[in-house]
Image 1 (tube, rainbow over the protein chains, first blue to last red):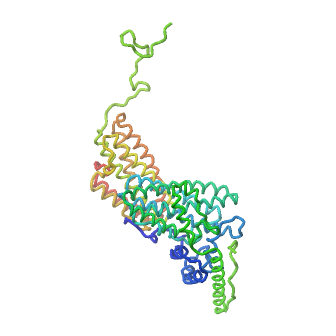
Image 2: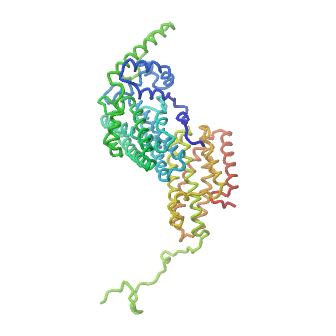
Image 3: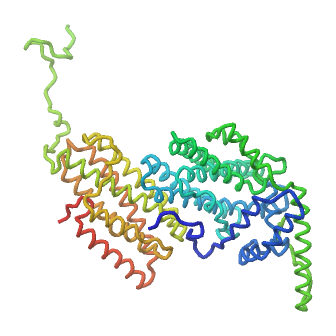
Length: 332
Length: 221
């Protein structure tokens, strides 16, 4: 078995549909400019359409066009929101595949670095079990909210960004970047479960969050160990973590901004061992990207153009024009 | 009336009144001080066992990403952890056997043939080779380890080497569970004659290689 695999080699059964990771990269680099956001999404429209075919995201695409991700992912989860169920399912599915990739990342850390210290291997082995349980937990939670594996396209962006060939950067990316993102997302899921009175979800996610704190601590300890007496390597690992944090902020969706879909879980991060300086850096790094007003304006334009194209196509085919019926519970 | 004496004094007339028993009288202990392996041989075997478990944990970890069946991925997650724990326990026994605390020498294959066998077990990596992956471990290597650990526990000195026996019994109990899991997976995956033959062929090939190198300790007849 070779060492170091690419994200597109992650094995999946036939339920899963792979999304081109370029989309997530685009999301992480969007400027606060309506025209540029519109232009960017129009340029990758075909890729987005291809990625949603055969999934439950297809009706969302048909209704909203290429910017459907902006209206489903960039809004906070609120139980009284008419689109709450759709957003919840999309987010839950994203977490499920994220856990899958975290399991695969921890497993590969065992195999890719055979000369690593034994204690590192023990930590990664433990993380394999934890992540495997998380996959099982989120598969149950998917069912709990009426969703299922493969319901939406999977981006392997998390594995691609986090799995460096250097062990110090691997733990910086997986254990601090990816697991740090998990801390933010799970804290927000617990908040949602509390607001919606979902005790099953609240308890399960709380256990998962407790595990993630341990994994971040593994990362903090091993970044220090792998880079001790080598300040340049330490700085490279930190810079790699900053890059991962930027990408995992999805253009401000995960940030300390008032309009963020996923707020930074400062207290949880402190408990996990992130320093105040690192958290402040994350606040700065994640604050960029388009504002809520920019996203709304761009999404409106993209939807109108998408519907116009659909209507023109229908007219050319002699059929009835129109964007069709909106999916039940679709975001407004 | 004087208190009964609890500790013997220095004179012959100052003994306590308690009846004598040997360390093994209650309950009666029929064990004898004899064992096939001395301290050095036991340490050598511990290194062989640790080598195997360390590599099994690494291989299983690497495979998770290459296996498309979700329940197999998640099932392997727990096995990775339990396998690493066994390797850790074997390693911690080494200093107790005067074998030092040098982690670099804690894992050793019995011979190059066994090291080659481990690499052959690790060889399948394509997503359509779950049968070959699991068969190598659960049909060949793990059953072999169970047999060797049970034989080792029977043959070693049951009093002097009791800590090793405890470790082997614990490892064996978990290995049996892993093999049972692997059999369930393979029974489910091998749903055609062709797939059953793939499983059998993989087992035959590795079994031959295992016999040729003498197994985990290099001592198979």
